[in-house]
Length: 217
Image (cartoon, rainbow, N blue to C red):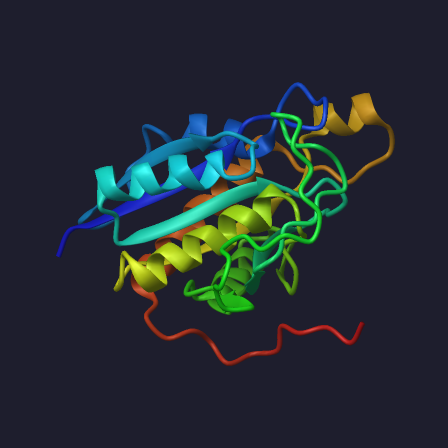
């Protein structure tokens, strides 16, 4: 059965000139997963509310069976596969439209949280086996990344049932680390490979691995 895959990323934010998730989208656009699958990409604005609206338009237009949303996590030096999205917006900095919601729900009346429906541990194991630093993350933050992750999960639970989806955070690019001081970084080619692996693992894995991926702090 043909499967359509939607990958999303974000425009730059916080005064930066690039966002690795947008760079990965550009590289992935011509790529075709193995087997009977096709891939489409969608760039999202780093704006509360508007990002979910653009995502919803893409879901309706593309009718994917699998959705992987990407974002930048500047403080991380691994590809981190997110486990849970929480129903809160609590912005430390303004978004690209100048909005800075504090302690507001992503979806009023929605559940407190949603778990990813991606095979998160199988993805992490596959990335590690490919030599790519990766781990399960227990928090997607409270900025627009978590906003989109929760909005995606809510849409899949209520309007696009049967579709699987989740969120993956990427480190900064090397040029960002050079411009902004000592920060973790990862080459673009490695991040592209990581997302390709995540897509292939997600397409072929219906039941996730039962292996340790938690933390003690």
